[in-house]
Each structure stands twice: as structure tokens, then as C-alpha cells.
Image 1 (cartoon, rainbow, N blue to C red):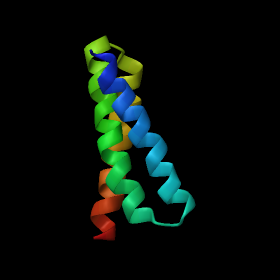
Image 2: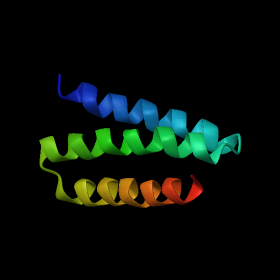
Image 3: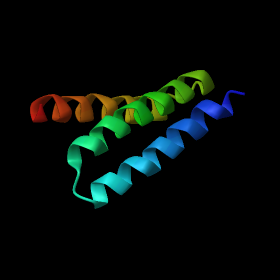
Image 4: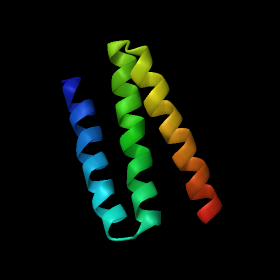
Length: 70
């Protein structure tokens, strides 16, 4: 059941890169941020500090970029 959180993050992450390929940066960030949140949550559940830092940092940076775009 916990793996569903990881799979949801993975699917959203893959979907977000489709929008990046289409030059739709705003949609990329709107999908990538929740993907990163799911993956960060999954890393927290697993207790994997490296991925907590990496995914959490990506969520923060992408949130700042999206905020500046709006």
C-alpha cells in the first residue's frame, strides 16, 4: 500500500516532463511539485534521508520558480 505513494509520484513526474517537452513550463511545475511532494513523503516513510533532501529541495526550488511565473 505504501508503494502506491511512490508510484503516484513516479507517474506524475513522468507526466510533468511531457509538458516540459511541449514548452508548457507552468503545467510542468503544476504537476512536478505534487510529484515531488509524493516522492518526498515516500522517502520520509522509508526513512531515506538522501531522497528526502533531494526531493524536498526540488519541491522548494520548483515552488519558487512557479511563484515567480505567476
